[in-house]
Image (cartoon, rainbow, N blue to C red; front, side, top):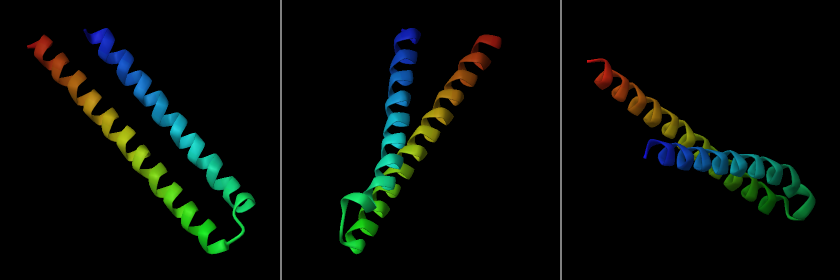
Length: 78
C-alpha cells in the first residue's frame, strides 16, 4: 500500500514540476506570440500566478508527506 501511495505522490510531483517548467517557458515566449503588450502582460501575470500556485501546492505536499513520515516513525518508535 505504501509503495502505491509513494508512486502516486512521485508521479504527481513530477507532473507539477513539469507544469512549472512549461509555464516558465511559456512566459518567455508570450512576447513573441502576442502583439498587444497589455494582453501579453496579462497573460504573463496569469501564467506566473498559476506557476506560483503549483509551487505552493508542491511545497504543501512535501510538508504533508514529511509530517506523515514523522508520525509513522514516532508511532513505530514508541
